[in-house]
Image 1 (cartoon, rainbow, N blue to C red):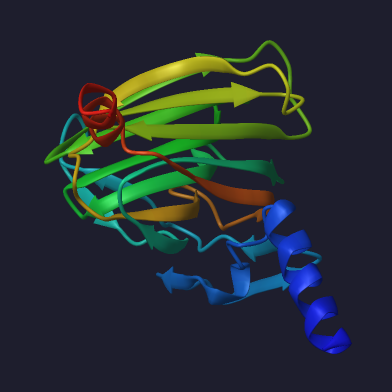
Image 2: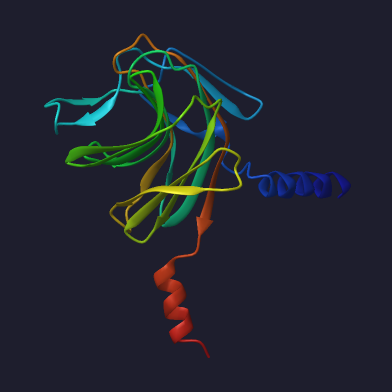
Length: 217
């Protein structure tokens, strides 16, 4: 009985610390050659000449960058701390929410023309790209995405306390989504990227909450 109690307490403590999303239980799409999980952090050497983009502006489609994910339905909040040894134009790392190869959102830090940019690509058959240029390099950034109904709100932070919205984008609701950690090196020979404190938090369904309010006893 004592052993069971200790096991149960350890499980409860791990859930309270946001460890329910065990990195070891996630899966790869385009697994890179070099990666490891250590101290609840994922580090990868990003596959050279890899990216996610669909048709628009550049006229090509690529879908071959590393993506480490789990599948979630409904509404949720996801966040992660991202650190990268960015070297070459378009080196990038962050979060991705992906339904399929024609419907996804990737967001994080992207290195463009020698500057750090907060970057978001939203793809629904064709891709668009929005950036916020930073005044100086940053050692890391926190990226957070909140999926509510048919929209995803994307935020950034440098301290995991004050978050600033950087994008609001449409994403089909009532559809399972692959949620996880993405990095790409379209023009380069790869780089090291580290993802820490990855956490997905379930959010109660808004439509159901409204129904409950209207039909409360």
